Image (cartoon, rainbow over all chains, first blue to last red; front, side, top):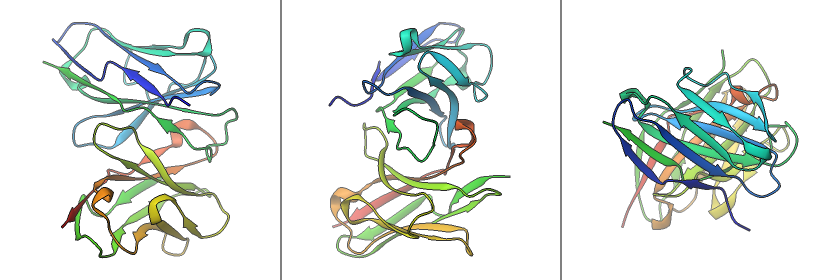
Length: 116
Length: 114
């Protein structure tokens, strides 16, 4: 079974440009999460999809970040325009149906975003 | 307020010696507790989890952790370190109510000396 995949693995962009990160969850997983780890800091929750609906987006830092999950399958996270403080590693995770957070979350390898 | 603290940012042990990675949490609710490991260029992988069943939890690769409510701790241990254990380890606390209550520790990088 394929795990969670993320694309690209690394992106280097200039301040003011736009970047779109993609996450493909494990097939059949209704829950999809985005997290971010800024250099030297903790991994922070960004948002949670249940199928195609945003269940909780309280962790999104500002309106320069837009997440979508087309048809409840893959998800994209767009940053427009990117700022220097957006640099970090963006992780995606998925888990099976239900909102019991004792379910294991399966993480992708992350996308390392560098804004120069 | 809910929080999780990993007391050591870096731990170095010799191969074959015990491993202890410390984690303390603060919570007003009954939490679920997890340890995840991240090897270079890989995603986080679940080592073990505590969800109010047995307080001593056994995980993969010989790791285990003990939930101690009185000490609000969930330390990760392994009797004998292997070179392949070198990685970053995260203690994670989650609360039933919301995904936004998933809190990660700052991580502990484990190095293994030959």
